[in-house]
Length: 281
Image: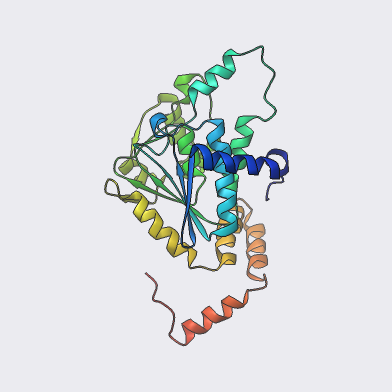
């Protein structure tokens, strides 16, 4: 499972329990649209605030998607993608100082779950609308392509709440927009519009209101047409190359190129050479 942390956090019996959570309380919705898994955050009354239960259910949905889909889409039900960490749950835990510490640390669980998307086995696209704040932005940063409609807005207000990012955003968001822009957002708590997010390359696509999910589905279906090996190399090998020195990066590229190709690759090459392949674009 990549980082070797799966065994520490998610076991078969826990996955079964989490799947029951998905089925019974619908806190995360799941459906297949052909080769694309559609995963919806479903706490609209809380603007999809990320509780521990939601993150656990999200883990199960993502693992299920990796087993039966070629690409995934993450989106939010209701008026927001996600307003971030469930602060009521956090406040309750902090105030209960005499309680025994939790067996699992929620923030480390977040790291594991978000890594399941970021460096898992299939690519993910996020459809963003309304509030995409704090932990919600950390979740959005863990996918490979982000589509926002014009109602989306982004913020990192943890500094104003007396807390710090804990879902991998210090790594992922900082890589996307750079230290100084991220420091500005965290120090001031200011909100960034969808248009500004597009200029900052925080999102790659911008749509009209209500159209982000439709666009994200279209992109995911296009991605699903690639070979699984190619998608895995783009989502796992490519980002690691970007973190290496020049020589090591070229060496890893050589190793990736030298991997044994699936039989499907030869068929695709022949389709192109014999003019049967669909045009690009």
